[in-house]
Length: 458
Ligand SMILES: [Zn+2]
Image 1 (cartoon, protein in one colour):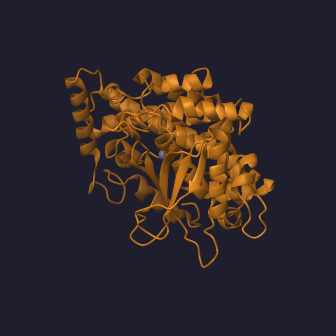
Image 2 (cartoon, helix red, strand yellow):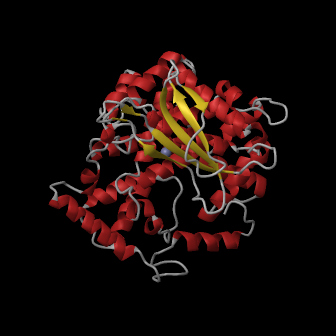
Image 3 (tube, protein in one colour):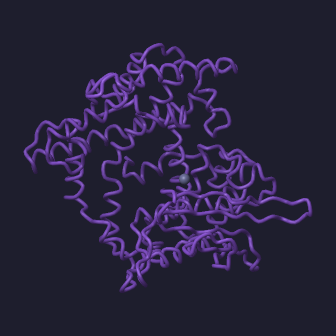
């Protein structure tokens, strides 16, 4: 959809894609999820009502950081209000670009990705191949460990691990100031045959006080699927890879640096899942700061850090159409909440009506009448995100605002780093995450930092 020059084919593809598993489009009625969605929503409403909740959204929010459906709705509406005017401007700019550069004056839904890609290339063109040489893996790890030590005062040192399951696997220890071991982790970073794809942190063992009185140190697995080294050349990462590594390492630090001795609330255990992405998304910020990139990057041949001009283009591309993207995520989130607060869905048409109302209020891009996005919205119908899709944006607000303190005091400010360590990373699921956040930031979270990072502040 981004690169296909054939407009008729794009239209065909678009229609087939957005009508998947519905009563419309080329496979109309063959795999229609409509009746199943009604059944799922009805059963969820019944479950919530049996347990004494007003609706499923209220039930799902039990034990989350967000305290009520109203709080989530207000939050989402605020983001929508902040993004809508900017999104309209982005859309106008796209239309103007398509008109002036390609003489296309009537953009349809199947043209958006195509001309957006062309506009993005004309503004910020760069390729992954241009970036890879600046991120040899050994240099990136060095930088990651440098950031960790600066912020949290713990050293990372390679050690001789036992039970390594493959020659690619490396073993590291986290060390306190006095050299004592605080935790350890296994790095398994390269793609290989029969290995599961993706990137994740998994807890191997958690911190706990044993019956003997001793402390069991935590251990973690950090898994990625980067391109392996070739010959004596190191693995060269894309910037996305670097961000992924920092993200998963943030989860790892949350698990490994905890001071809690009770396993069920140590590390990431017992942390509500709309707050658990805070440390991981928080760590990503250092991948975008030149002061940190001087440590994280270094050209494989010259050792030069990532050039300022290239970083500038990467940042521009990162915020390209950020208001439209935010609005889209907010539209999905509001729909998710609305459909789970409804309580009286009796037909697929009811679901469509809820979505139409949300789009009417929020969207700047009008979806064609046949669009059945909801029929393949598997996050909320097949996954665990029912009345929880908002949590992506929720966690982004927390991590952006937490990083805001470092923007104010310096990205390697020791005092702020140690405060994040003691108030967020060490506390596990013992306290309410809001209390942790307030203890760290000195106030409740604000959406300003996320808006600023997305290039949206007024
Ligand atoms: Zn994560």
